[in-house]
Length: 280
Image (tube, rainbow, N blue to C red; front, side, top):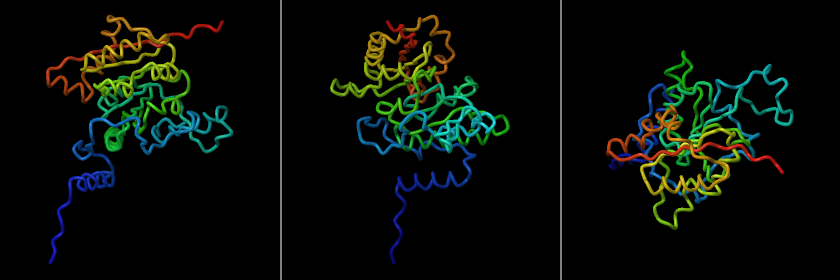
């Protein structure tokens, strides 16, 4: 008589996530069942789904409470895309590398008139944030809180312009990105001359890029590359200190809380998207 082998940790995680979805997602998910390595290689050939262009992005799946009615779309609907459900407003805030969603959840009530998207490359971490948001929506069904945040799996180093139109975003958060300490890995950093041009493309003039890290070398790298880019200017320390989003970013991300527990230092820098110069 053979005894059945006990389930592995991986099987336990899969069973929990399946049962959690079947239970209606009213209960907050447990992070230990969504564990994955701290970082992912952005140059790997991940199996990702992304729109061919921003006009083909189905945002309605992520923000069902903001789907426009037929009357609201009577004039605006694109006749060439009759089956694409459109939103009443555009997504305007992106948390790139959102991790377990702490910043998204904290900003949701502080930016009630904005649609915020978290973009995360790791599969299980993305699933955790999505389950967390669904649970929060179910727990706050009467008030309608947390309908304005969502999370999707994406590699923004490759596909950012596929999701957002020119000058669509007003805020971009880059919180505790992978420092890639080795010089040969610096090309994988989330801030570079090339990527900054993509941020400039999708950002509205006057919009802000928020950066925070506990690695001083990475902080200097990000400051240098944004300072050298003609589309961005450093926000003053006085304005930075008075920005509610900076205060939230300092204390609400999971990485930020870990730095706090370890009594580490946090380095913040914000950059404003400048107006493009007029054509000659």
